[in-house]
Amino acid sequence: MGLSEGRYTSARGDTPARGDAWYRVALCLWVLSFFTGFFVLASGFNSDPDDYSSAHYAAQVPRLLGVTIVSVLVPLAAAAAAVLALRATPPRRDQVSPSAVVLFLALTGAGICLKFGIDAILQAAEFAEHSPM
Image (tube, rainbow, N blue to C red; front, side, top):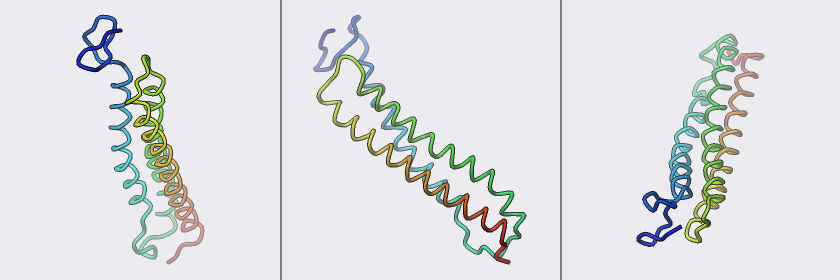
């Protein structure tokens, strides 16, 4: 492996190391997880719960489950990409710390999205059983 402008390159010498690519993917997915976290938070928000019947809330449970699954998968994909960046060869000292930070933040984001999603599902299920109307 050779050095080209201070960066590791492949054996051919023309492409950046795989760790850089995985780190960029992890970072982009982590940024995208902010939006999915917002979507799961907004999907479970009920501004005036007594406007709808219990049948409406019963129908919302599968939609909320789907939104929760998608919102958790995005930060988990970011965490997986961060792990691949950490395990990339050759290891680079300037890449290990940022990848570890993205891994920690992505796992934290997945936990937060899961909490918001479960809370929204439980609230919709409760409103489906005992309508606030």
